[in-house]
Length: 276
Ligand SMILES: Nc1ncnc2c1ncn2[C@@H]1O[C@H](COP(=O)(O)OP(=O)(O)O)[C@@H](O)[C@H]1O
Ligand SMILES: [Mg+2]
Image 1 (cartoon, rainbow, N blue to C red):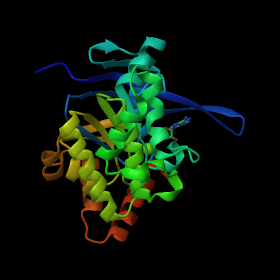
Image 2 (cartoon, rainbow, N blue to C red):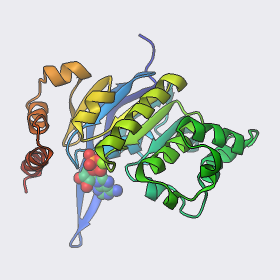
Image 3 (cartoon, rainbow, N blue to C red):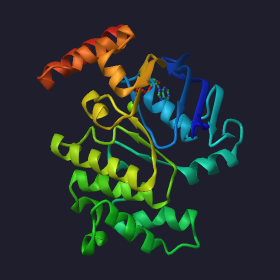
């Protein structure tokens, strides 16, 4: 088997938090080892607070681990300082749940997609690259000159996706990318991500608490629980033969017809897990 694109090994991340003047350590990621292979969509699932976003941010070099190793394309990023962050900037992109927070409200769609291209690849015609990237997500013609607020939520997420693909990354970390969208729009954006992956040979780390979406898009699933990966395997295997009791609970909670009931059950699991 070829070397994985990303190799996470024994990674721990502690945060120090202050509560009423006292310092306390929160172990957000607890000894995680995980490979992401080229061309796959690895879904990271688990309830809120289980450490999914922190693991994504560690891979993106937005946080430094307390200990452990993170390799990208064979290169160790931990302790590599600026060189590691540069590798991450050039080769990884992130898409967040809320494109509002990541888009500049006073810049047109075209200019914000062009910006990272002109920073990372000054030799390129950034506006031409941006126009092509926007066309790939279905935004064409005069629309490219409009500001974010004049687009719908789904279209804004398309602009964020265009900005991610414009710099030709190898890996995209998508952190709850469709969680804020209506179900119908969710399906369109999920389909778009899948098409782009095929066309551009992208690798995805797809962070989500929504198992229905994960089943649609993921090739492999890793289940996080209290900072640890408790189970990992091909999507069908995880859904059809979950091994870990937590995975079974998670699946039982969401595999009911009524989303309101599913949400209530998920909340119960979360509360039990955090001891509230
Ligand atoms: N910057 C931070 N400072 C302190 N605690 C944090 C920070 N980021 C995350 N945490 C804590 O780490 C744990 C995991 O959080 P997170 O990775 O956001 O989980 P998830 O994405 O699965 O909801 C939580 O207990 C959260 O409060
Ligand atoms: Mg999160």
